[in-house]
Each structure stands twice: as structure tokens, then as C-alpha cells.
Length: 379
Ligand SMILES: *Cc1c(COP(=O)(O)O)cnc(C)c1O
Image (cartoon, rainbow, N blue to C red; front, side, top):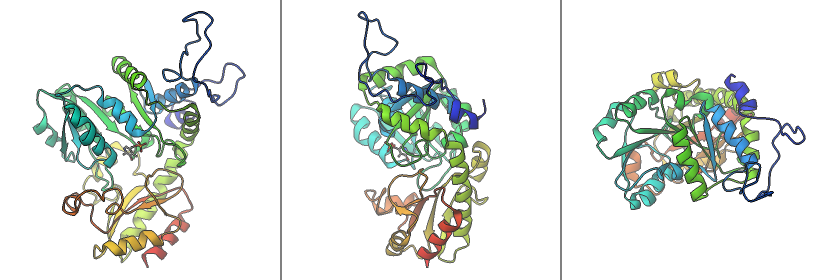
């Protein structure tokens, strides 16, 4: 089955009771038993729920894995991965990381005796310097947020295999439409399904997909034992979202490209960070591991003026000023005052998050309206 068919049919069976095309929302906490242990495969909804199960099968299918797991949020999914580790273990993580992941690693798991190294992985060989006897996991996010750097998943996977480490990839920005980390050698794929997989800004959810049965069993155990599952209604919504992932992504990519090109020639714009440009430092990696370049991009305005950047995001009308990304509607954000406000100015400017940086999640509206909105806001 090709990807554009998997989004609609992958792992899915019609409802056995009445042939419903979409799985019913099994809004139930428990299931009747005829005799102790005499049930139809479902005992309690923390452990199993048919609607969630249908979604988990869809996750596995679109990521070319064998096992999918759905969680209450993207961070709950990452939390489950970290619980595979023990005190004394070390993790090598991308340095330009989603803020919530960084907070979970440094404010929660560090207290439980896990050590994190944050490394610039644009040159994959940088990773090897940090590998020692305690290293267990490499955590990769690509493209990175908000600088849109690209990490070579295959190269990192070669390193992880050489040293018998686990490799997990946060595939939230790219989605399986653009890149499939398990095929490139990753052991675990993670998603904030809140973003493109759900796609309509109406659910918070997380996902994991793996190929290996033993690893899947460990994660299912953690999912059930820790209990950060998602509900059946949300499972239904994300399953519905996935069915249009490929058509949405195609338009996100088309619009993203037009917006990037428009901004690049605008006299008020200093720099545009979009991996589709040939002069992007990791363009060749993006081109080889991604099908297209996505709908996420960032840009800076000339003069690097904090107030001026805030004026632009306030003047944008179709691009709503908001956290999050990946929905059908266009959003904009000002990292220096929003997602990255807690990072000291010098430190954040070091990674490129300067005062005038604006991040866009380009939606699937008509491109003419999006360009017109950017034009009026930049004037
Ligand atoms: C949003 C996001 C997360 C966290 O997911 P939640 O669903 O908000 O918990 C993790 N990684 C990336 C790249 C994200 O964008």
C-alpha cells in the first residue's frame, strides 16, 4: 500500500457490528465479562480501547512500523520513552530542541539521575564525542524549531547502531508524509499528534511507533502502568485527521514554498530559514531524506528590532498569533517573546533566535490571501 492510501486505509477494518466505515467512539471505561477473564480482548480502557486501538494501528501504518501507541500529549509520549531508562543512563539529544522536551529532560528526568548532553547534530560525527559506556539513547528532532536545521537521520542511525544505542526521532515537524525515520534506521518515532497528524488545532495528543516487538511490549507496559493515555473521542478526531494528512501536507508544502520565496525577495526581510533554499546549510540532507520541505519556516526582519517584529506579528490577520503549528490555519509566533522567552538573550541569540525572528506555520488557505496578509503586515 502506498502512503496516500495508508493514511485512509492503513491498519483499518470496518466495524464488525454494523459495518460502520469509521470506528465508533467507544466511550467506555470498562467491558462486560461473562466469567472472570472471559472478555473480548478489552478489559479496562487505560489498557485497551477499540477506538484508540484503531488509531494506534493507523499510526503504525503511516510510519512503516509494526506497533503504534497513543498518549495524552506529545510530552506524555516522550515521557514514556524516557521511562525505558534507568538512573545513571545518558542521553545525547539535539541541542536546538522543542522547549517542552528540553524542560522535561532537564527539570524532571535529570532529577531521576539521567544525564543529558545537548549536541549540534548538523554534523552527525559530533555525537560520537559524547558516547560512553552509560549512553543508551540518542534523541533527534529534525527539522529543528525554530531555526529549521536538518539532521541526517541515516548518519545518526549508523552511529547509534555501531554503538548499540537506541535512536528516537521526533517527527512532528516533518510528518511521515515527508520523512519516515524507521526506514532510515530509527528505533522509535515520536509525534506531537496535536500538530500535523491531528491537523485541525482541536486535539492535544502524542504518538510513538516502533518496529521491534520487545521494545513495543516495554512501551505498552509503560503506557498502561503510567496511564498517560488519550480518550476515545480524541482518538477518533486524530484518526479522522490522518485521513487527509497527505492532501493537507501537499498544500502546506506548496504554500510554504511560495511564502518562503515571497519573503526572500521582500526589502524588509533579512533572512529566511527554509530548508528548500539551495543556500540553506543543510539543503542537501533535506533533499535526500525528505519528500518536500514542509510548511514551517522562520524569518528575520532587517535591523533586528524587537518592537518591529512584534508590530509585524500584531498586524498579521490571517496568520493568527498563537503557540502551536501544523493546523489547517496559518499561525505566526515571535520566539524571543513567546517560546524562547525564558532563555537568556545571549544564549538564545547564540542558536539564532534573535529579537526579530518570526516563525510561521503556513496553513492551507489560498496562497494569494496569505501573501497579501504578509505584504500588509511588513509595510
Ligand atoms: C508540540 C511539540 C511537542 C510536544 O507535544 P504536545 O502535544 O504539545 O505535548 C514535542 N515536539 C515538538 C517538535 C512539538 O512541536
